[in-house]
Length: 174
Image (cartoon, rainbow, N blue to C red; front, side, top):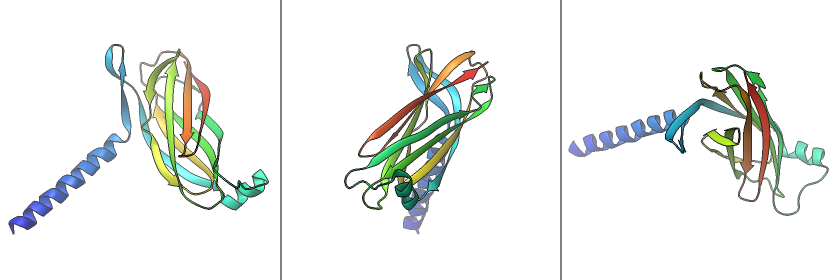
């Protein structure tokens, strides 16, 4: 009976830790800066869907690689591109993976927001295993109520175990 209680207690702790971890996957990002730790913005949940299959990508590209991995960062977008303080933006990334064989590759997507060249916030890396094809991954980002007006940069990096691609896009807060 004691063993069963300890087992249930252990399982309960694991579940609670999982819930805590899941709830910290999104939310305000704590950044270490010159003045200590501070928080800037709120990253919401992410969504990912497949756009084109491996076969469709081979047709689009006109060939299939005989070795290694092709990784293309097709599109990075911030919608809307002009927003008010406190608005929620959708950050969308479209990327393509193509290898000689249909295998799942580890994919990491990282996003960094910069203002006047300084890092303000970074999403937790989105790690997933993806088969060949094109993929769309989006995440919501809520601007802080005290965001300064101006032009911001979203730097998006997609990487696999073989290579990486990066793009910068800008958006305006007014």
